[in-house]
Image 1 (cartoon, rainbow, N blue to C red):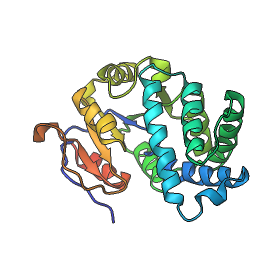
Image 2: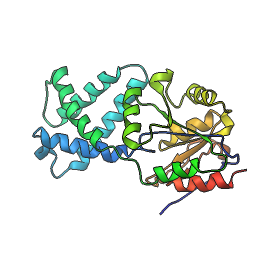
Image 3: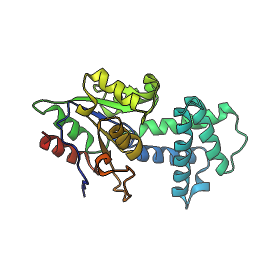
Image 4: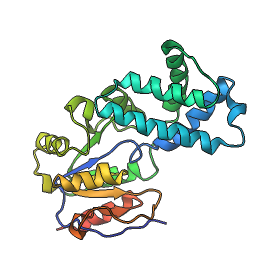
Length: 253
């Protein structure tokens, strides 16, 4: 069931900015399928049979950990792939892989991951409805991902017509206010004229709110957590579906 929480969106947007992975692209499902298929293809499937959730959780936690190191400038994009893949495989008894062998394993996973790229069911209906508004806001996708890979995702999802901004191209990641401000400037809108929609509460919604935009937490899993911001005025809007956002646009002044 679609749910919506506190709504602080008062101004009709001149721009709508959207995160990509977990917001438009079902990254979790694609990554999970790809991992299990890669394990089976490389003879490691029996080692995770009976506990696939543990393998998926381990892969995800390593992805989050080392991708953040990439965003922090500690690792290159390729290095974070090597390290998280090597640490994951070591958990299942595969040790001493050199860099080339590790990347070959990751490339097998990546091929399956790319084949599983799909948009969430509410994405195209939402974007089509926004485009059909009498005064449609500008649309842009803003991601902490690497430019070339995110461009490929947009093509796979049929979203290549939407302008893409990435942290790798802008030189600063979310939730740094500088990224949000650069995007708004490029679109020719003030920060308070833009809505930012993303599945990561802190990086996307709270980060956008702190930068002067109107943040929307797209909480697709309906996570029950206490709000982190120190005051109610800092709370982003929260919903489990993009359909609610469309209603808010219509109701905004």
